[in-house]
Length: 309
Image (tube, rainbow, N blue to C red; front, side, top):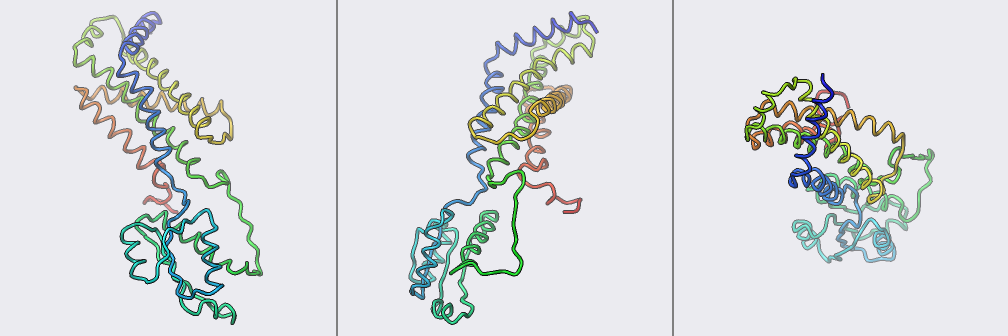
Protein backbone atom coordinates (compact mmCIF):
# COMPACT_ATOMS: atom_id res chain seq x y z
CA UNK A 1 0.00 0.00 0.00
CA UNK A 2 1.09 3.54 -0.76
CA UNK A 3 0.81 5.90 2.20
CA UNK A 4 0.65 9.01 -0.02
CA UNK A 5 -2.35 7.71 -1.94
CA UNK A 6 -4.12 6.78 1.30
CA UNK A 7 -3.50 10.24 2.78
CA UNK A 8 -4.72 11.93 -0.42
CA UNK A 9 -7.94 9.92 -0.39
CA UNK A 10 -8.37 10.53 3.33
CA UNK A 11 -8.01 14.31 2.86
CA UNK A 12 -10.42 14.26 -0.07
CA UNK A 13 -13.01 12.34 1.96
CA UNK A 14 -12.55 14.66 4.94
CA UNK A 15 -13.13 17.75 2.76
CA UNK A 16 -16.31 16.21 1.34
CA UNK A 17 -17.50 15.38 4.83
CA UNK A 18 -16.89 18.92 6.11
CA UNK A 19 -18.63 20.48 3.09
CA UNK A 20 -21.77 18.39 3.57
CA UNK A 21 -23.94 19.98 6.31
CA UNK A 22 -26.51 17.19 6.14
CA UNK A 23 -23.93 14.54 6.91
CA UNK A 24 -22.46 16.61 9.74
CA UNK A 25 -25.91 17.14 11.22
CA UNK A 26 -26.59 13.43 10.95
CA UNK A 27 -23.30 12.67 12.66
CA UNK A 28 -23.58 15.20 15.49
CA UNK A 29 -27.19 16.25 16.05
CA UNK A 30 -29.04 12.97 15.57
CA UNK A 31 -27.08 11.01 18.21
CA UNK A 32 -27.76 13.77 20.72
CA UNK A 33 -31.44 13.86 19.79
CA UNK A 34 -31.65 10.09 20.19
CA UNK A 35 -29.76 10.20 23.50
CA UNK A 36 -32.02 12.84 25.06
CA UNK A 37 -35.20 11.42 23.55
CA UNK A 38 -34.67 7.90 24.84
CA UNK A 39 -32.95 9.07 28.01
CA UNK A 40 -36.05 10.94 29.12
CA UNK A 41 -38.74 8.87 27.38
CA UNK A 42 -37.72 5.37 28.54
CA UNK A 43 -38.27 5.26 32.27
CA UNK A 44 -38.81 1.89 33.90
CA UNK A 45 -38.99 3.30 37.43
CA UNK A 46 -42.31 3.41 39.25
CA UNK A 47 -42.70 6.81 40.87
CA UNK A 48 -45.96 8.40 42.04
CA UNK A 49 -48.11 5.47 40.89
CA UNK A 50 -51.68 6.72 40.42
CA UNK A 51 -53.89 5.06 43.04
CA UNK A 52 -57.62 4.91 43.66
CA UNK A 53 -58.88 3.98 47.15
CA UNK A 54 -62.21 2.67 48.36
CA UNK A 55 -62.34 2.46 52.17
CA UNK A 56 -65.41 0.45 53.15
CA UNK A 57 -64.26 0.06 56.76
CA UNK A 58 -63.63 3.72 57.64
CA UNK A 59 -61.99 2.94 60.98
CA UNK A 60 -58.79 4.32 62.53
CA UNK A 61 -56.94 1.23 61.28
CA UNK A 62 -58.13 1.62 57.68
CA UNK A 63 -57.42 5.35 57.72
CA UNK A 64 -53.91 4.61 59.03
CA UNK A 65 -53.34 2.25 56.08
CA UNK A 66 -54.55 4.93 53.68
CA UNK A 67 -52.14 7.38 55.34
CA UNK A 68 -49.28 4.93 54.71
CA UNK A 69 -49.98 5.04 50.99
CA UNK A 70 -50.48 8.81 51.01
CA UNK A 71 -47.15 9.34 52.77
CA UNK A 72 -45.14 7.15 50.37
CA UNK A 73 -43.30 8.86 47.49
CA UNK A 74 -44.08 5.86 45.28
CA UNK A 75 -47.84 6.50 45.25
CA UNK A 76 -50.12 9.35 44.32
CA UNK A 77 -53.67 8.93 45.58
CA UNK A 78 -55.72 10.84 43.05
CA UNK A 79 -59.16 9.35 43.75
CA UNK A 80 -61.15 8.36 46.81
CA UNK A 81 -64.10 6.30 45.66
CA UNK A 82 -67.31 5.22 47.38
CA UNK A 83 -68.18 2.17 45.29
CA UNK A 84 -66.32 -0.46 43.26
CA UNK A 85 -68.10 0.55 40.05
CA UNK A 86 -66.43 3.96 39.99
CA UNK A 87 -63.08 2.37 40.84
CA UNK A 88 -63.42 -0.07 37.92
CA UNK A 89 -64.35 2.78 35.59
CA UNK A 90 -61.25 4.76 36.60
CA UNK A 91 -59.06 1.75 35.84
CA UNK A 92 -60.70 1.22 32.45
CA UNK A 93 -60.16 4.88 31.57
CA UNK A 94 -56.49 4.73 32.73
CA UNK A 95 -56.95 7.54 35.24
CA UNK A 96 -55.40 5.27 37.85
CA UNK A 97 -52.96 2.35 37.59
CA UNK A 98 -54.10 0.48 40.68
CA UNK A 99 -57.09 0.38 42.99
CA UNK A 100 -57.19 -0.65 46.65
CA UNK A 101 -60.38 -1.78 48.37
CA UNK A 102 -60.38 -2.03 52.16
CA UNK A 103 -63.33 -4.26 53.08
CA UNK A 104 -65.64 -3.88 56.09
CA UNK A 105 -64.30 -5.44 59.26
CA UNK A 106 -60.66 -4.67 58.44
CA UNK A 107 -59.97 -2.87 61.71
CA UNK A 108 -61.92 -5.42 63.80
CA UNK A 109 -59.91 -8.28 62.28
CA UNK A 110 -56.63 -6.55 63.16
CA UNK A 111 -57.77 -6.03 66.76
CA UNK A 112 -58.60 -9.75 67.02
CA UNK A 113 -55.25 -10.66 65.47
CA UNK A 114 -57.03 -12.32 62.55
CA UNK A 115 -56.21 -12.15 58.81
CA UNK A 116 -57.39 -8.83 57.38
CA UNK A 117 -57.56 -9.14 53.57
CA UNK A 118 -57.22 -6.10 51.33
CA UNK A 119 -58.21 -6.22 47.66
CA UNK A 120 -55.66 -4.82 45.16
CA UNK A 121 -56.66 -4.30 41.52
CA UNK A 122 -53.80 -3.49 39.13
CA UNK A 123 -53.87 -2.38 35.49
CA UNK A 124 -51.86 -5.07 33.65
CA UNK A 125 -51.63 -3.13 30.38
CA UNK A 126 -48.08 -2.13 31.34
CA UNK A 127 -46.56 -5.36 32.73
CA UNK A 128 -43.38 -3.81 34.12
CA UNK A 129 -45.25 -1.01 35.88
CA UNK A 130 -47.85 -3.49 37.13
CA UNK A 131 -45.20 -5.83 38.54
CA UNK A 132 -43.29 -3.10 40.37
CA UNK A 133 -46.51 -1.45 41.54
CA UNK A 134 -47.76 -4.73 43.03
CA UNK A 135 -44.43 -5.22 44.80
CA UNK A 136 -44.58 -1.71 46.32
CA UNK A 137 -48.20 -2.14 47.41
CA UNK A 138 -47.42 -5.53 48.89
CA UNK A 139 -44.51 -4.05 50.85
CA UNK A 140 -46.75 -1.37 52.40
CA UNK A 141 -49.49 -3.83 53.31
CA UNK A 142 -47.11 -6.52 54.59
CA UNK A 143 -45.55 -4.12 57.13
CA UNK A 144 -48.86 -2.76 58.40
CA UNK A 145 -49.46 -1.92 61.19
CA UNK A 146 -45.86 -2.76 62.18
CA UNK A 147 -43.01 -4.90 60.84
CA UNK A 148 -43.53 -8.53 61.85
CA UNK A 149 -40.62 -10.41 63.45
CA UNK A 150 -39.35 -13.16 61.18
CA UNK A 151 -37.21 -16.17 62.21
CA UNK A 152 -34.90 -15.54 59.23
CA UNK A 153 -33.68 -12.04 58.50
CA UNK A 154 -32.93 -11.26 54.87
CA UNK A 155 -30.36 -8.60 53.97
CA UNK A 156 -30.41 -7.62 50.32
CA UNK A 157 -27.59 -5.97 48.39
CA UNK A 158 -28.00 -4.77 44.81
CA UNK A 159 -24.87 -4.80 42.67
CA UNK A 160 -23.99 -2.59 39.67
CA UNK A 161 -27.06 -0.35 40.11
CA UNK A 162 -27.70 -0.01 43.85
CA UNK A 163 -30.29 2.76 43.46
CA UNK A 164 -32.20 0.72 40.80
CA UNK A 165 -32.45 3.77 38.55
CA UNK A 166 -33.49 2.73 35.06
CA UNK A 167 -31.56 5.60 33.49
CA UNK A 168 -28.32 3.94 34.64
CA UNK A 169 -29.26 1.07 32.33
CA UNK A 170 -30.84 3.03 29.46
CA UNK A 171 -28.07 5.55 28.76
CA UNK A 172 -25.12 3.08 28.57
CA UNK A 173 -27.29 0.87 26.37
CA UNK A 174 -27.90 3.83 24.07
CA UNK A 175 -24.14 4.22 23.58
CA UNK A 176 -23.99 0.91 21.74
CA UNK A 177 -27.25 1.51 19.84
CA UNK A 178 -26.21 4.96 18.62
CA UNK A 179 -22.81 3.74 17.47
CA UNK A 180 -24.42 0.82 15.67
CA UNK A 181 -26.91 3.10 13.89
CA UNK A 182 -25.12 6.21 12.64
CA UNK A 183 -21.49 5.37 11.64
CA UNK A 184 -22.56 2.59 9.22
CA UNK A 185 -25.22 4.87 7.77
CA UNK A 186 -22.73 7.70 7.16
CA UNK A 187 -20.21 5.38 5.52
CA UNK A 188 -22.80 3.69 3.32
CA UNK A 189 -24.34 6.94 2.07
CA UNK A 190 -20.93 8.47 1.32
CA UNK A 191 -19.86 5.59 -0.94
CA UNK A 192 -23.25 4.99 -2.59
CA UNK A 193 -23.49 8.72 -3.33
CA UNK A 194 -20.35 8.38 -5.42
CA UNK A 195 -21.96 5.50 -7.29
CA UNK A 196 -25.05 7.58 -8.07
CA UNK A 197 -23.09 10.64 -9.22
CA UNK A 198 -20.57 8.57 -11.17
CA UNK A 199 -17.50 9.94 -9.40
CA UNK A 200 -16.56 6.44 -8.28
CA UNK A 201 -15.44 5.75 -11.84
CA UNK A 202 -12.58 8.20 -11.29
CA UNK A 203 -11.46 5.96 -8.44
CA UNK A 204 -11.52 2.97 -10.77
CA UNK A 205 -9.29 4.84 -13.22
CA UNK A 206 -6.84 5.95 -10.51
CA UNK A 207 -3.83 3.92 -9.36
CA UNK A 208 -5.55 3.28 -5.99
CA UNK A 209 -5.64 -0.31 -4.85
CA UNK A 210 -8.69 -1.86 -3.18
CA UNK A 211 -7.11 -1.94 0.27
CA UNK A 212 -6.03 1.70 -0.03
CA UNK A 213 -9.52 2.75 -1.11
CA UNK A 214 -11.16 0.88 1.76
CA UNK A 215 -8.72 2.28 4.31
CA UNK A 216 -9.10 5.82 2.98
CA UNK A 217 -12.86 5.56 3.24
CA UNK A 218 -12.80 3.83 6.62
CA UNK A 219 -10.58 6.18 8.61
CA UNK A 220 -12.52 9.50 8.29
CA UNK A 221 -15.82 7.97 9.35
CA UNK A 222 -14.16 5.93 12.08
CA UNK A 223 -12.77 9.22 13.42
CA UNK A 224 -16.24 10.81 13.26
CA UNK A 225 -17.71 7.80 15.05
CA UNK A 226 -15.02 7.99 17.74
CA UNK A 227 -15.87 11.66 18.27
CA UNK A 228 -19.49 10.58 18.62
CA UNK A 229 -18.35 8.18 21.35
CA UNK A 230 -16.69 11.01 23.25
CA UNK A 231 -19.77 13.20 22.80
CA UNK A 232 -22.37 10.69 24.00
CA UNK A 233 -20.20 9.49 26.89
CA UNK A 234 -19.63 13.09 28.00
CA UNK A 235 -23.35 13.87 27.83
CA UNK A 236 -24.22 10.65 29.63
CA UNK A 237 -21.75 11.16 32.47
CA UNK A 238 -22.15 14.93 32.86
CA UNK A 239 -25.81 15.62 32.01
CA UNK A 240 -27.47 12.36 33.08
CA UNK A 241 -24.90 11.79 35.89
CA UNK A 242 -24.28 8.15 35.04
CA UNK A 243 -21.75 6.80 37.56
CA UNK A 244 -18.37 5.77 36.16
CA UNK A 245 -17.05 2.41 37.31
CA UNK A 246 -14.16 0.58 35.72
CA UNK A 247 -11.35 1.55 33.39
CA UNK A 248 -11.99 4.47 31.03
CA UNK A 249 -8.98 3.58 28.80
CA UNK A 250 -10.39 0.07 28.39
CA UNK A 251 -13.77 1.57 27.51
CA UNK A 252 -12.23 3.76 24.80
CA UNK A 253 -10.15 0.90 23.36
CA UNK A 254 -13.18 -1.40 23.22
CA UNK A 255 -15.21 1.44 21.69
CA UNK A 256 -12.58 1.96 19.01
CA UNK A 257 -12.76 -1.72 18.02
CA UNK A 258 -16.55 -1.45 18.01
CA UNK A 259 -16.40 1.65 15.81
CA UNK A 260 -14.23 0.00 13.16
CA UNK A 261 -16.61 -2.95 13.17
CA UNK A 262 -19.70 -0.81 12.63
CA UNK A 263 -18.04 1.29 9.92
CA UNK A 264 -16.99 -1.95 8.25
CA UNK A 265 -20.65 -2.99 8.18
CA UNK A 266 -21.38 0.25 6.35
CA UNK A 267 -18.68 -0.55 3.79
CA UNK A 268 -20.18 -4.00 3.27
CA UNK A 269 -23.66 -2.59 2.69
CA UNK A 270 -22.32 0.04 0.28
CA UNK A 271 -20.86 -2.71 -1.89
CA UNK A 272 -24.33 -4.23 -2.28
CA UNK A 273 -26.58 -1.17 -2.67
CA UNK A 274 -26.87 0.94 -5.83
CA UNK A 275 -28.99 3.84 -4.58
CA UNK A 276 -28.89 5.91 -1.40
CA UNK A 277 -32.48 4.99 -0.52
CA UNK A 278 -31.75 1.27 -0.77
CA UNK A 279 -28.52 1.76 1.18
CA UNK A 280 -30.35 3.59 3.95
CA UNK A 281 -33.05 0.93 4.24
CA UNK A 282 -30.59 -1.97 4.22
CA UNK A 283 -28.37 -0.27 6.80
CA UNK A 284 -31.28 0.38 9.16
CA UNK A 285 -32.46 -3.22 8.84
CA UNK A 286 -28.98 -4.68 9.34
CA UNK A 287 -27.88 -2.43 12.20
CA UNK A 288 -30.64 -0.56 14.02
CA UNK A 289 -33.24 -3.31 14.34
CA UNK A 290 -30.86 -6.00 15.69
CA UNK A 291 -29.24 -3.51 18.05
CA UNK A 292 -32.66 -2.74 19.55
CA UNK A 293 -34.19 -6.21 19.54
CA UNK A 294 -31.32 -8.64 20.16
CA UNK A 295 -28.70 -6.70 22.11
CA UNK A 296 -30.48 -6.80 25.48
CA UNK A 297 -31.26 -3.06 25.37
CA UNK A 298 -35.05 -3.46 25.32
CA UNK A 299 -35.47 -7.16 26.15
CA UNK A 300 -33.08 -9.08 28.45
CA UNK A 301 -31.06 -11.67 26.55
CA UNK A 302 -31.83 -14.40 29.10
CA UNK A 303 -35.58 -14.08 28.31
CA UNK A 304 -35.02 -14.93 24.65
CA UNK A 305 -35.40 -18.45 23.35
CA UNK A 306 -32.59 -20.88 22.66
CA UNK A 307 -30.90 -20.87 26.05
CA UNK A 308 -31.35 -21.50 29.74
CA UNK A 309 -32.59 -18.69 31.94
